[in-house]
Length: 106
Image (cartoon, rainbow, N blue to C red; front, top):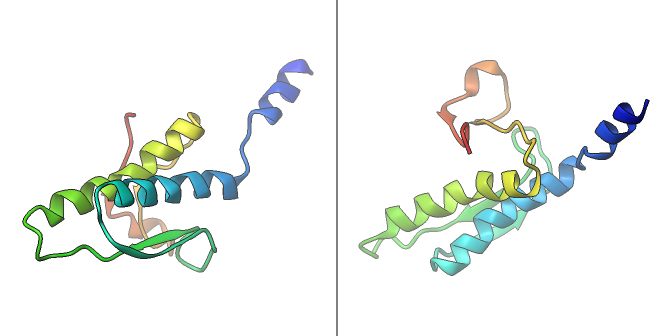
């Protein structure tokens, strides 16, 4: 019985997990000066949240800065919730939409 209660107490609210994930994207985007127009955890039919980055392609290193900000979300999520099982990016439309493995081993 005690194990069951302990396990239940360790679960995190999915909106808080999403908030940490999106905050990871946004904070690193700010630090790396990647402009973005929106950071949201409003759920829709294809995602739980989003950060709409608008990289300045006139900068020589725009792709590197943008990629680091994209990868920051899963790291922030796992730091907040180490048991998180988020592994794939996709639209959420179905099993065939998984197009990129993210954060599988961290």
